[in-house]
Image (tube, rainbow, N blue to C red; front, top):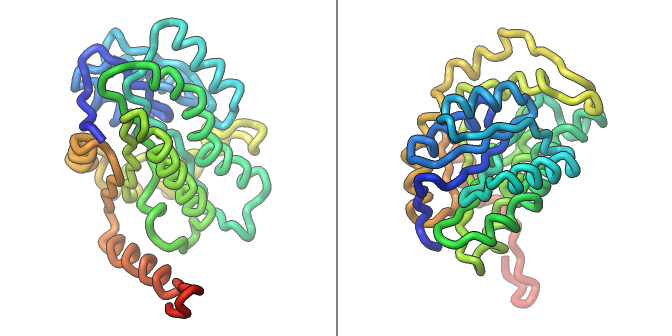
Length: 274
């Protein structure tokens, strides 16, 4: 794939851009001269991101778990001239729940945002991105939890983020014939407010809930999204691929253990060899 070269004046559409990694991505690409279209379920925070990114940037509220809303927002913005050369599928939520015990609305929420959200966003925006010429790219924010064995108290989150990464792999295969690169960004734990994601949870998933402030202490002790810069720019320069930027020291060992477990389970029925 060709390197992605942000072109001044081109549009970058970024979901989940109201805070955290999404806001950092918006400011990162704005600094390279791109016009930013910041989408977020919290329209006020999306507008603040757009303000930080320059007067030509735009903002719009968008709940990516809602297919029809995602389509409507895309259609409205495209009609206004927002035709992206960069689509960054970033919106994601977290919750300390397990697959075996999660309540149905919590399960629907995480699946709706982390799995169906990327699909809704891709289907709404990719036809316009593909119709453009020149350097084009798709980014998707997965997680370091996407590449290590599922474990700990966030097993439902980790499961959905492995699905997020799989969607990125699917898009990479699908976009290759159009020479559109795809980056699968897998950050470790960063100083963002994902721990308090339920503050913007829609009513159909149980409504908004404010987590106790002390819950965020672990996240506040971590580096900010700016640690992603070098890895991200390097990956874009080679045309996309996996961009894994861990903050936990054992991520590499866990990845190795996962790959070894997969190899240990490999059996070639034709030769009878494992």
